[in-house]
Image (tube, rainbow, N blue to C red; front, side):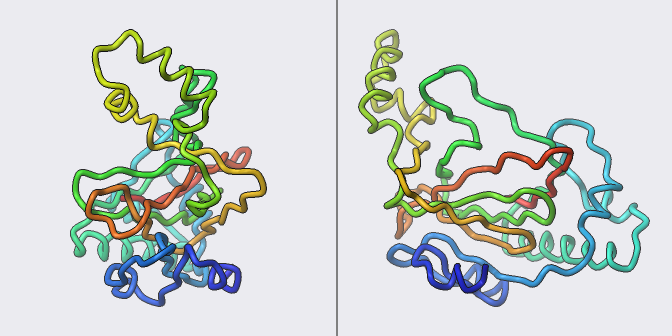
Amino acid sequence: MNQALSNHNQVKLVSSFEELVKTDFQGENNALCWHRNSEGDFKEIVSKLELKENITEVSVEDLLELKLSAEGNIAREIILNDMQLLKDFGAQPSLNLLKNYDRDDEFSFISTDVYSFHVDRSPVLMDTFLCTYFGASSDIISNSEAEQKILIPEIREKLKELHNNTEQSFEEFLTENFFDLHYAAKTNAKPINLGNSHLWRLAVDHSDQAVLPCIHRAPVENKDEYRLLLIC
């Protein structure tokens, strides 16, 4: 994975948290990866956490209460350290035990859930951080390999039909309903999987952002397996 990522213009590898947060996005680069060797037993942590809803937020206290093996404790310390680094940076990390996200089935012609390629929009210039410690991991795709769904003619026509019953401008309608955040992969596109244990920083959609926002999607979960995801 390391070699494959280092050859891709979209992704830049870094070797520390400080480098992750201080490196500027430039050109085609809109994803930074603190690439780390997998250590510890995250599966043990997942097996001992209780899933209360499809997405269950795990607190620091929940983690500290777990009775773990030496390898499980290594994994816990990695998570706790990541959370503290992000908090000290000013972010608000959330650790989630995840069975699945809700699916968007309101419209047959356009999906707007997190399983669809999309970008994140933020009212302030604060990028998305995420790390999948266990389970299926997210994909990103270069902006040149994706097309905004609202620009695809057949989808745009159907959206115009929906818009006819509103008093908003068409562009406001698209933004208010988050249709403009979603993308379709072009033929022969090659998504990049983010893997496990690596902490990523993805560029968001913001007027002061120097680069295009990073297009990404949540993975289809592996059968009978929960995900452990840190995100903010």
